[in-house]
Image (cartoon, rainbow, N blue to C red):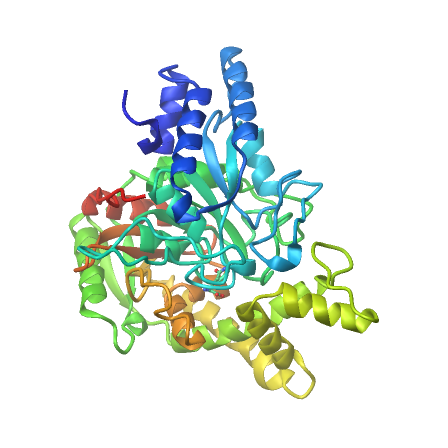
Length: 490
Ligand code: GLN
């Protein structure tokens, strides 16, 4: 029998349905793979017994002909999602051993359809980072390596555990989250597919908050079709999240192989940033060519405020984070450092519980919201955000979807960018715009760098038009025929 851990989610669900294997067999294969891959540090909590229990229940349901849409499929869950009775810390020291008494809506949706939880996945602390180096539990390692080089590379961030575990066949697919690129960038660094839906599609209830007006749930998976299968289940209307949209979730799986004939694809000239590497430019040109050959019409578009997106994001996101993270004061959750009085306890807890990058963001956020600076920074950034949104609205009058590179570079090595926060922030240059405008964006692996690492292309769609992302993403996947896998060294 083929190694069950290498199956796509679609193939695994077919195999379960046709009784080629049971969920218990599939889950045992993943539990074993996870045990052997601890060097990757992708999981911060392994739940093998719980997984087997869920798998047994799934097999029993299937035997009775009552299987849900994901029944028996073993998944990894980013540690940002509250899971009842299973430690959830968003990989921050300040949450200590926090174990939620409730389940996030997104994960509940997965369990309601029969999915199996393998464990909680490593991530940057509170999802702040692009390399997984800010995790309290140490960084995740990318299963990919440069050709002829054993140096450890980052899987990207913040959903590095999700991306690494999917790329290394430690789960069929994983949940992730995206505030400024945290689904799309790690997907691009690991040869996997990641999609962030339109803001409001997926409930944020029970997701540890980073920047509430930007945060969205989404999957990282092996194929565009798998990402559609998972996203359909993750999205739902939820009265427990006031920003959740009361609309039906479409059948996106059906869009993946529809092709792009007659679609108009916009190419934004402002994404040709200074210093864009030849390699990334060539990949982008290749993507344009593929879509043209598949029958799409290519249109030059302009998104004039693009250059302000990154600075605006790095004001809005820290501002919201400073407000959201005020709740971690040692009183209600997790760890506490006892001082001589209340103020000392607050200060001691926050100084020792938060890592350096989180502290930096909280200081920036508090500063830009403080009286006297609010208008100059926060309000201004909000205005820029509106301009960026309007740029997209005008561009979408002439095109159906936008094609850009996903990231400015392939995966980098640990320490390569962590010394300079601004250099790290530049990773998000192509992804933050979709968050600021609330639009859906998908990253699809499209080729290999000269050093043998995966590179991704990004497709941005109109609000609520994930269908376009799936159609274009599917066409790119077909054309690229990306089948490369990391050589197994772990
Ligand atoms: N890298 C970005 C940041 O650090 C995005 C993170 C995210 O999307 N969660 O803010």
